[in-house]
Image (cartoon, rainbow, N blue to C red):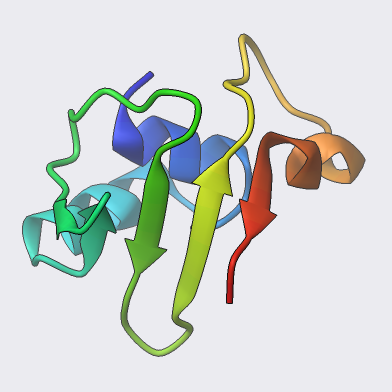
Length: 80
């Protein structure tokens, strides 16, 4: 699954286009490296999102379809 898609589906960033812009600006890192919007995310990856609301997460699972609001946090674990 793409980085920008994952962040929007699990509700870390509200829209995929915003996630794409943030990744293009260098505000998102995957395992300590700059993350591109189309980077493939896998279970166990550590994602750091910078900006006004910084957050670091570990990917627990990848969603296969739409994600209900109450299920979002089952796909990642907050590390900060």
